[in-house]
Image (cartoon, rainbow, N blue to C red; front, top):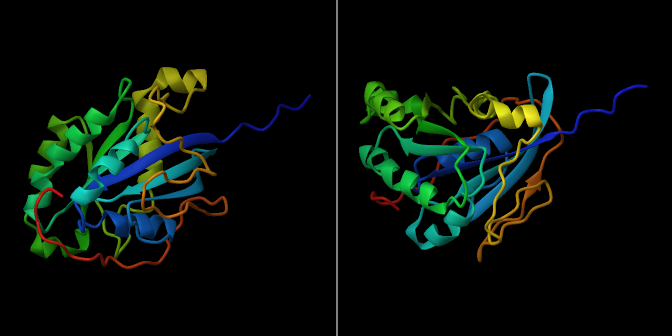
Length: 231
């Protein structure tokens, strides 16, 4: 008797960071979706080491006025990407605040793979944050550091696969048991699935793509510019 096909694993990953640091450009490069208003969710299938994963990607708004809404999307994640602009040191200095926001949103033990993402890697000649400083900070926070460019695609195409592998390595017992989705006890938390919609007062409806392995979509690295500060 043939064995039934393995079910796709459900994975949820969120981008967070200040407004205009480049996280939405990365999100758009990966998903070929649209820019976020409050929180944008996009689902797609990603093949990692022969296993298909249904990945829900959340792009959370960095503006202060959406801060309370953003917290609801930071619960029960498999991966969280703390993003900053390598050409603006103030956005790097705000990562501590974003980590605190993330940790305060958790209702159960945090199981997520954490990444520190230096955005706009194509503007390295204008950098205000050195690779060494970013790597040392990431190490002190038990995070993996990557520099990405939505414009050139550097370190973008394999980003999701890297996060999924890191989650599995961090939580081998869950993988062995077939439990790939962290539980969320807070009833107000949003459930992530291919049919989910955002619960924000202002939101964008989820978009869904055909099952594919990560490819290299075309997009720009342009985001609206705003004043500095941790918002």
